[in-house]
Every structure is written in structure tokens, then in C-alpha cells.
Image 1 (cartoon, rainbow, N blue to C red):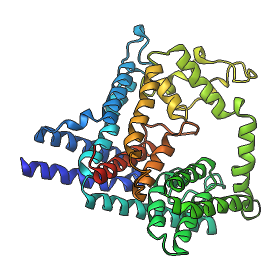
Image 2: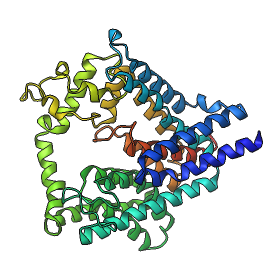
Image 3: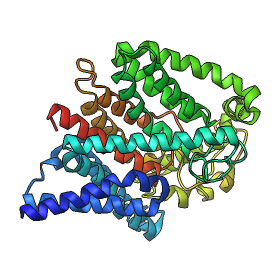
Image 4: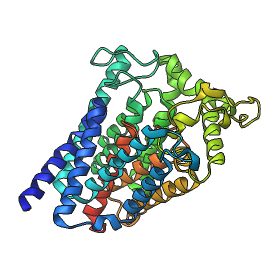
Length: 416
């Protein structure tokens, strides 16, 4: 049995360590790596008889949340369930791989110090890899693979679409904060690390990722007082860099400043305002069961869910033209997927994750734990546009970083 457990651990570890690369360039294979690591973890638990991890609050709530949403996905129209049909149910069953992957990392794969150091090295290398592409593309108009900017405005890094900034908002803080904190005794090096990182994400030209990174740095400055001057300098750099785009890159300036003003002034009848309005209406009409997994895709175009815009100026709220596969916000998605119970369970899941991740940081602000706590907190922040938490690649990054963060917490505090 010992040999079998060791083999399962090795397979799960390899699957985990290649996942960051797959999330960047091979999403389909990342689905497989998630599933394989989770399956190995289940088999390991069965072989050792260790199921204690199921009693951990964040795992237990995640499974209840998943189970409730799965129930809401049952294709039984007579009971008002499963607007997404059979495909919704299949997706719901397979979605268990996400929380299971996080649990595998937290309780087995990344519990050894050596494996967590390997994960940090891989994430750091990924950050450098994306940054090099961004700088090259900013200077020459194409990345190292010869691909141009997205819509002739946004930097794409090593990708063909505008995926670099959301990725950097997730992998930069747990690399930047520990590195900068490690070299605090050297006068210029921590400033160079911090300013280089914040500049890399700013030049991409996307608003929300920049704000998320600043938010994570603010958390680090709050918990690690010696980092406050460095973080303040980074914020000043952003404040100077963005206006300079008016001369350096007018299209980037328009996207970050003028476009932001347009979206803010016309939010009620804008794309996001109408999307959230539609999600709210679906939740209002189906408050107890929602529409199940992937239900927004099927429900959004239905006229029964059309309602006037928030300001009442558009009678049908944009009709079917504003629809997308998800409502672009974790909390509205939870409401649509599982009604009010689904929304409450998702909020409880978020709280159950953040409580252990933040425990003890005020007394002992370990930089690695601070960086991971801050990035999980940023991903759960409700006032932002997000992709689906059940989709690759960003959903995958969420659960990977959550599992890594939990592993760091348990590995350093020994309190699952």
C-alpha cells in the first residue's frame, strides 16, 4: 500500500507542477491535470483511510455549495430546475474537479516545504516569462512570437488574446511581495522589484487588473509596515505612468482613462450594467433554485427575464444582444446558478477560505502567506468584472492559488 500511495503522490505532484504551464497555453490539458490530481488524492484518501480533510470548513462548504448547484441543475422543468438542460448537469458533475484540486494541493500535494518551493519557482518563472513578452510587445508592437496587440491597443504578452493582465493580477502578488520583502535591507533592490512588477501590469492597458494588484499591495503594506514606503512609491508610479500614456500610447490612454469614464457615466445602460441587471432579474424570478450550472447562457436570452435597465431608459434591458455565457461577476453567477441559497453558500465559502488564510498574519506577517492571502482576497472582491469560477483558465488559477495558499498556511502553522 505504501508503494501505491507514493505512486499516487508522484502522479498528483507532476500533474500539479505542470498545471501553470497548461493554464497558460493548453487549457484542455489543464482540465485533465486538475482531474488527475484530484483523482489521485481521492485514491490516496481511500488507501490511507484519511478523510479528515472533508471536515475542514472551507472544503465542507465548497462541497455543499457544489452539491446544491448540482441539484439546481437537474433537468426537471416541472420543478423549475435545470434551465441549462442535460449539458448543464454534466458540467455540474465535472465541476467537482475544481474544489477537489484545491483540497489535493492543501492536504497532500503541496504540504511538503520542498514542493511549495517548487510551486513558487514555477509561478515566479511564469511571471518573468509573461513580463518579458509584455515589455517586448510594448517596445516593438509584437510579442516574441510575432503576435500583435489585441484590438491594436492591449498588450497580450505571450498569448494571442488579451489574457496577460488578468493572469498577472493573480500570479504577480505572490511573487512580488515575498521577493520585495526578502530584500528590504537593500536600499534599491526592493524598489526595483516592486516598481518593475507594477509597471509590467500597468503597461498592458487594462483597468481592473491594475486595481487588483494595487489592492493586494495595499494589503501587504497594511500587514508588513516596512513595505509601506515601497508600496506607496509603486502607487505613485502608476499615478504618473497612466497619464503619460496620453503621449506614449494614446490608444492605451483612451482605453484606461477615457473608456473608464464612459463606462462609469453610462453604467446603467452599459454592457456590464445590463448584464448584472439581467442576472438580478433571473435571481428574482428563481430565488430558491436559480438556473443551475451554466444556466446564464441558456436563460439570459429568454424574454421572460428581460427587464428595464437600472435607470429605466431601455425597456428590455438590452434584449438578447447583451448576453454572454456568464454574468461577469462571481456573486451574480452564484445567484443565477443556485438562487439565494447558492449565493449564501458561495459567500460562506469565501469567508471560510479567508479566515484560515488570514489567521495569525497580524502577529506574524510571513510575506509568502501575505501575498497569497492578498491575491485570494482580491479574487473574491465583489466589485469587479470576473470570468466564470468554473471555467479555464482564470477559474483554474483561482483554485490553484487557493490550494497553494492553504498549503502554505497549513505547512507553516500546522493547523488545518
